[in-house]
Image 1 (cartoon, helix red, strand yellow):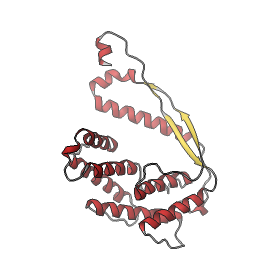
Image 2 (image 1 turned 120 degrees about the vertical axis):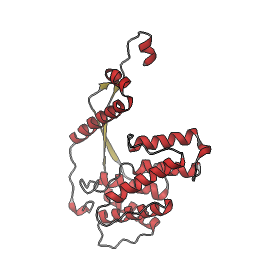
Image 3 (image 1 turned 180 degrees about the vertical axis):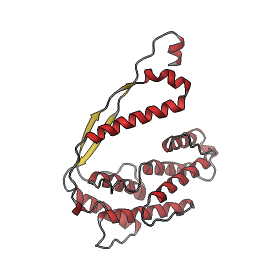
Image 4 (image 1 turned 60 degrees about the vertical axis):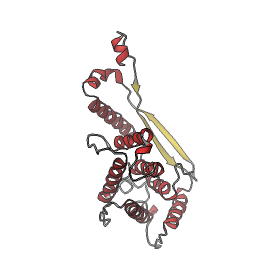
Amino acid sequence: MKRLEKGGQGLPDIYVVPLALKYQYQGNVLAYIDNLLLKIEGRLKISAPKEMSRYQRLRAIAICIIERIESEYGVESVSKVGDLSESIESLKVQLLECCEAVVGQDPNPNFSFRERIYQVEAALVERPESLEGMTPEMLKRSISRLFNFAAISDGYVAENPTPERFLDVLVRFQREVFEIDRPQSEVMRWAYLQVGELFNLKDYWAEYKRDRHSTVERLIQKAQAEVQRKLDEFPQPPIDPSWGLGE
């Protein structure tokens, strides 16, 4: 862009296309959930009483995974009674700061959580021989964990207990427990796509030159807001309380 501008050429049109993608499972999805719960509980050696709902079993798995990671990295443990939000966020922040220390990178609150993960990943690629306290393989595993859990928060399933949300979290736990990147789904699902309102990056070039970081952050938020707007337009599937997917 700078070279084009200096050469007196017009700036090209570079459009951002916000895409909203939503999945809906088909077939006997509850049997799939039950089977996956059993597999993960078996690996973690969790014995779930019959009276526990699927949601309660999901939370028990979450607590077990949090405690395992806390123990593995030797990070501070936070109470897991009631709301798990504080415990989840504390673990994510401590794990990220641990990875940043390994690559000799100071925590920068001006960057988003994901941006900081990308910076650690870039440092691993550029300086794999200069890590302190972890091997490159251990750091790769830690980075994968951070990406896997970046979007998880307590209440995500409870506020809208659909099979899709439940499995979104459960499959992330499956990745963690079995150390697999792309688990194979055992049920069919439809994918629905909506295209949001496009915007041209060329229109923000002057602003970008004045303040690169703030402009990038604002455009990311603009794209995310448009994706969320389109996601909210999808019809809400019916929810049956007897499924036991929520509180």
